[in-house]
Image 1: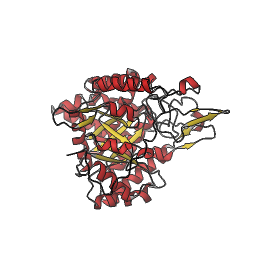
Image 2 (image 1 turned 30 degrees about the vertical axis):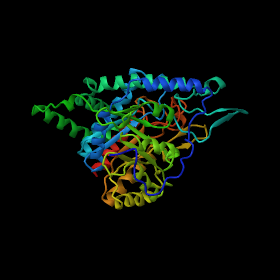
Image 3 (image 1 turned 90 degrees about the vertical axis):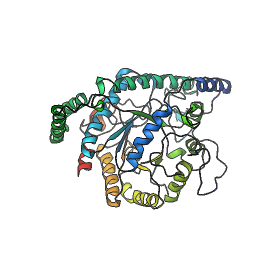
Image 4 (image 1 turned 45 degrees about the vertical axis):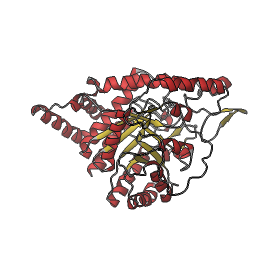
Length: 447
């Protein structure tokens, strides 16, 4: 496949200037950091990216389910064994439940080891008459509202690389050891079912999983997958100085890969079909994804397919749908029908978080658990009606007991939001809410 010269449904216009990029005040410092990154070892390897393409091809064919989740925006202070382990544990717990319910393999992908930059709606922020550059994630500047912290610093890109290295080392060590053992993960879920008021409704499903594990043990079935877990990392390919500096050419094929993560996506604000971010994705061999909101037009989706997956190769392209609970049932069908009619072989994944955010009178951005569930339900209903595969979930979550989203098994309400609101940007499901979501999605899958 020649990713450097994809087909196009229409002649591309002159690409606009890259969107959502910081204005580095010190160009020499930026050039020095980019040179360091170009000489650095890859964070992930081509063979790993190819393996994820194979797994996502199964998702596109309806033979697997994708679970993708993690922080809205990683921060340098969260790069610890405790934080990484908590998020990984949450995703592993969710995956066990979904695997049993869907009766297909669950591909596990973290929003980890690279999710340090965030798109923003405005370049500046004003408080009490003082205007400063907006916080664009730890990859660019600091969240504190003062001139020194908000000054874009290209040296932070090197810190992103170092923090991502640490995270990947922790993930690889944990997923290949006893931490990811299937029996251990189920024991954690059993604890949730026993101790959480919301969890008690899932006791029957937990009992079924336990009986299956006991049966496997009695039969002497102990494959390597029981004691370890296959896990991949992903992030939004937003900061192009960083992403381009970490492209590496595979010695086997001479093909370029983004070595910053296994799967790279573009978001709602940077998915211009002829933009710099789509151009970057078109030139790497990794599996890639595009976030799709309620205003996306069916013909626009076909342009993404032509640009990013001209050979219609399952596993190459994923559409992450973020419609909002009120619109998913009305807006999604026409997109799926158009793509299917055109022969696109993509994976369809539900992001029930971004279309359901609102701001409380106290100024906290939050999401309602029941509304998140409703979008998941609507996503499944659309695919069931069309006879297509609801391929997965993409969720902003944390393994900590934060109070950022309201409702769910942890019974967080509006008054609780200030207690542990720790997100650097958008609200995340906490550990209990995430496990609750997995069990509820499992009920939908079985239904």
